[in-house]
Length: 485
Image 1 (cartoon, rainbow, N blue to C red):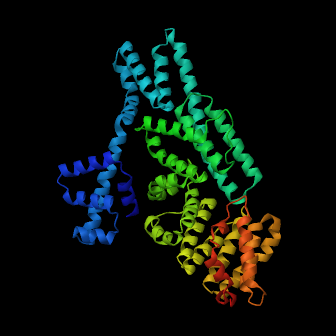
Image 2 (cartoon, rainbow, N blue to C red; image 1 turned 180 degrees about the vertical axis):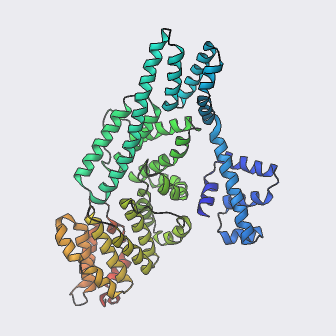
Image 3 (tube, helix red, strand yellow; image 1 turned 60 degrees about the vertical axis):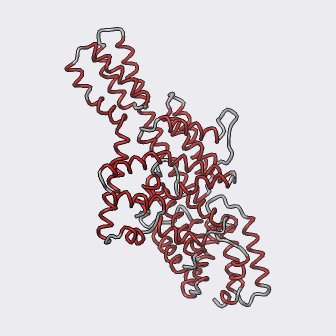
């Protein structure tokens, strides 16, 4: 249901009206009614079944047909004119064998101009290869040979840029969980390499790919690191917005719009322009399942969940996340091989459970995370997940499991070194103090340790910073209920 609703809510007004018109022409009144209900009210399945007055089977069949109609409509929008260009490229051999040479050359030169507009180097190499053959005995042969060679090189540069994109965001996951200076250095080098690759050719596509890294790097790796000769981040975002809007039929740009909406959201959050954060939030939130699933090659989408949790804490809406997640992320498939993303997603969902007082569910999620993954590369991440697990067990008064997890914490802190895991160490002391009912001035000590946590700024992603240490939480930790554990 989530994907179906997301699809309808993401439709532009123009596309929504066009789909309604098509349905009206085919007398599909029930499909129109369903489309309008989802678009305007966004109800759950049970409500839709009641309003449609249909059986569950009839409803699901109707929903499936409508979903198919919408997808077919969107595909048709993408087919022209870009798909027509591909079809023309496939017809090149037919042109070579059936048309007079002058007509063939004129046709290919027209095709060349169209392909340049869409920045399609693979197809341009085919055109130039054919023009080379047709101009073999003329002075233009050298020109087209050079263009052919140049576009082969450009095609390789584009492949290199796409490869750098994927490697950069994979490495960012390591940096996020470790805060490692060597990982940061690698990210800096990859950013520089991407800039060098994109500078080789005047290409809007290379500019867009470079921007995906450049903007993200400024916001999350080296905040506010803008050189005098570089575009300010906001101007860079606007420049990409202009490119994407100029090539609406490009299938990559059609989808990558989501990435730049996400980067706008991150940009305003970074500078705490919260009014503008809200302008992007609802749209990004609705599309977040797709963002998390399909866009890891162009950004680090799990960042959205960190910002989502911070936003909820800022607005005191953290308790509402549990219900939202059950609707929005019910069909989300988590890639456990991508450890940093899996870690962040599990932390987010377990904290959402925790704030809804679903301590057992939260603990179960974290237990699976801790036991399923090899943590050799990420010792701090494992340590903080275990400390979070102790907190969940404490809140649930689960003495047996709390002791089981706590057993190895002190040893793990000793191995890592207190100076290398200050946030985890201080949080561990806070929980240890909360558990000790015999400790004098326990409440004062808990408050002191909680205030100290606010001052610590870890270099890596710390899930413990997402635990709300307000008066209510401090009272819980100081209470005899927790102390008895």
